[in-house]
Image (cartoon, rainbow, N blue to C red; front, side, top):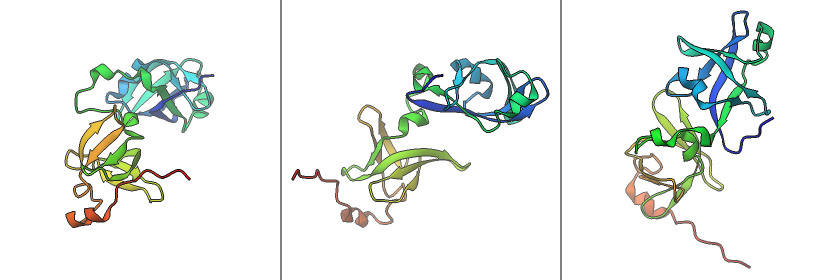
Length: 189
């Protein structure tokens, strides 16, 4: 049983494929067939899965795991999400303008005046480009485009995103910016 400290979703298992215990899986890696390159995959209930064979098929991969030897065992995995520890992802292969979604979650979105628009709570891709979900205290979550126009700078060390609130769709008019007041520290009583 393994408890992951900083899990990153790598794949979701679909239905069984054939009779030998293979499953279809949706891989969230740039190269779906490279899913096995990251070591053992883990479920949130603590199980570990070692990939023995993997092959691409249309828009999924077909995977055979160690210990899953028949269709019944494969069907029992349907819908299971598989993760790896964030530290297992290769940082040296990233370009300067590339980021793992897991690293963006938790960053605070601020404009150039220091106004906070919330914290990144999720990164989504519904097919028309990546979106960042921002959630501020007492505010409803909002989605902004994850584009060069709306996200100007990412500082992982400081834990912040520099955003353009107009390009991000958070304000309609630059004059509205004066209505926002930067978060002030609370005084102790």
